[in-house]
Amino acid sequence: MVRCFGLALAGALAACSTVVPRGPVQAPPPQVVAPNPSDTEVQVGIPRDAQRNRVALLVPLSGGNAGVGQSIANATMLALLDTQNQSVRVTNYDTATGAATAARRAIADGAQLILGPLLADDVRAVAPIARAAGVPVLSFSNDAGVAGNGTYLMGYAPAQSINRVVAYAGGRGVTSFAGLVPNGLYGQRASTAFLRAVEDAGGQVASLQTFARTPGGVTAATARLAGQGAYGAVLIADGGATAAQAAGQVKRGANAGTRILGTELWNSESGIAARPTLAGAWYASVSDTFYRQFATKYRTRFGATPYRLSSLGYDAVLLTVRISRDWRVGSPFPETQLRDAGGFSGIDGAFRFGRDGIAERALEVKEIRGGATTVVSPAPSGFVK
Image 1 (spheres, rainbow, N blue to C red):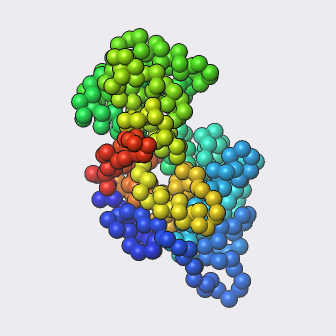
Image 2: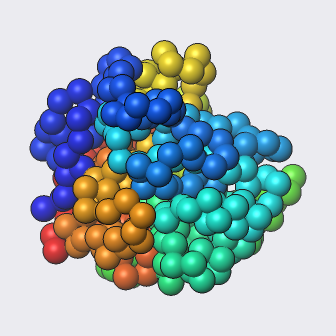
Image 3: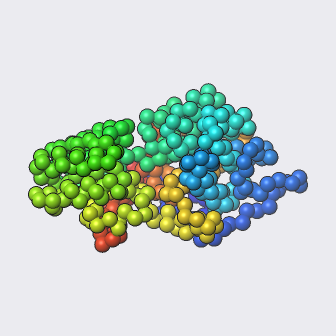
């Protein structure tokens, strides 16, 4: 059973699904005589009361990644509003001026839990500081290499999306696979996940080509791939623009009917379905069902479209508030509750943390069809313990 967050989100969480309220929820007035911030206010700097569990949000609020960082921060505010929470205060810290400095400030301010950072290098800087203070970290990174020892990853792990889409293809009769993966850490991990997934699906990888993310890089790799035979499916482990370019070259001659497979990167690209060379392609990702509701509410409140990753901030707060029922103010965060084998449910669907600290997610498979994406294999509603 997935462990529902069980929060006041404009009604109960039906069937353990997150329901995003349609309108702003007004927080109740403070229950103290002295002036205090509103119950759902996200403060920058040291919190001004000691009646709530202190949580730090570490994201870039300046510099080149300020857009996504601010979107995550806004999402945490919405989560606090939606839950009418009175037990958790989230304080923002800018990692663009130094992630380690931000972590030290947060811990000095009394934070017992850190949400973020976003970038893997920032997680590496923050993790030892937080670990020494006994403060767990719920990072938004997808780099499996930074997980463990008190650091948990909320990010969408590429290995999981590759395994899901390959398993789906194998279940529909595909036995011969090929892959195009970029050089670098992402490509290395995608390659490893791809080889294992194909083996688990009972298929064979006939060719696996790497490419540099430089002009002409994927074109040369695709030419090498095309010269080695026909394939039932080809994984292109990169973003939509590169995948569309490569797909147009792959689907020629003997490979005209080859099925193109994508990764979780595609789900963050709103225009992916409009690329004609990707028609018929399959890719796995978290569900967008509740995210679309969240995005509508976000636009109404902030007058802008949220970054897709902002749902990680929202779900991190939902999880924190759920656990805060058993979290006495001023005491360490009850980290053991993060390891509930039944999992949790949020905007992005069901998830749970494994022993490695990586969020295992229930993913759906989508097909690009007629200029839109259609779910061809729904995400499971939960996990078997």
